[in-house]
Image 1 (tube, rainbow, N blue to C red):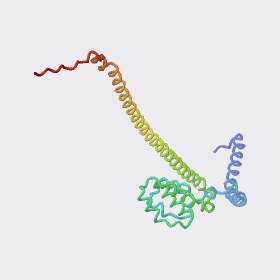
Image 2 (cartoon, rainbow, N blue to C red):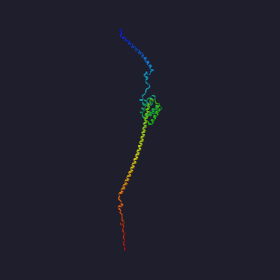
Image 3 (cartoon, rainbow, N blue to C red):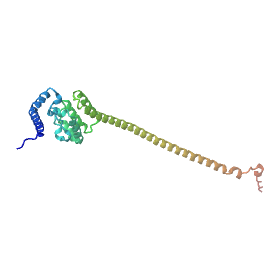
Image 4 (cartoon, rainbow, N blue to C red):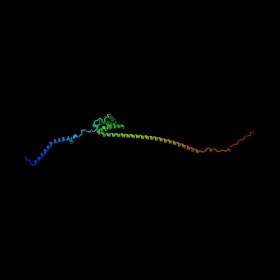
Amino acid sequence: MGAVSPFFLPLGRWLSDRFRRAMLALVAAPALLAGCTLHSGSNTYYRPVEDMIPTSKVVDFRLAPCETLWTLDDSDAMTNSLYWLRAMDCADRMSDTQARYQAQQIKPTSWDTVFKQSILISGTDPDLQQRRVLLTHVNQYRALMPGAIRPLVQLWRERQTLQVTLGDEKGRNARQQEVAESKLELMAQQQTALEASLADTQRKLKNLTDIERQLSSRKQMQSDLPDSDGATTSPVKPEETYQPPAREKNTP
């Protein structure tokens, strides 16, 4: 082989230095990574990604079957607003008979069981007194309810309160209508009595008018008749009626 050109000697040294630095970087990389791992233990910014993901998962009860919903009583479900929203939706879909039967299966011994039973009964269109009782029971357990569901409970209470207010207003209007109808009926009876009295008075007036007309006609007839005593008799003088006595015949 021929001698190496002096031009390639600096280039060879430069490549050799670059290769040597690259090898040193590869050798030092594990040590640097180890140092970063040790440093991440004391600095939360370098915490691994899996440690930042929460271990607890929020269960979506929007597709939960209504048949098994009422038997759940674990803390995760009871503190989940989606559970109670689904419970209200299921109660609205149930018939009155089913809702009452399911409510009877629940023993109201805690805030969650009282709320479940109240949700079921409120969907059966109870009367105003029953709604007031439901509100009273739920209010008694409000202090024990977790803060996560209190806004939802407040919305349910406002809905029941509106139902009670609406029922009171309907009852008040019904009573006022009954009073108005009673007054109208009384006025109708009074009008009938007045019309009957007016008809009786008009009949009496007509009878009096007829009687007066008859009396007036009789008087008119009597005034039109001639005086019969003055027309048939005339005064007779005494001399016209005197007759001399008859003479007696002489007997022989």
